Length: 87
Image (cartoon, rainbow, N blue to C red; front, side, top):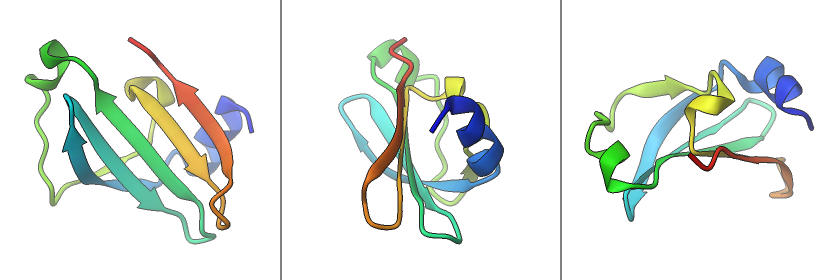
């Protein structure tokens, strides 16, 4: 699956804060057809302390380049897309 296709198909998917570990926030969401989307933001102390997270607020997947990494799994748990934007 290409980044362009992911953007078209999943760009409006809503994600919620899932957890925080080693300077990285994790957000997850599911589509109606069973895809699981996991996105990470951060990775360094400089980036993470300026990022405001509200556990009740939903985020759209939106632009893939806005995340540190994006992974999409199909309904059977098979990875169909992964992008690492290693800032």
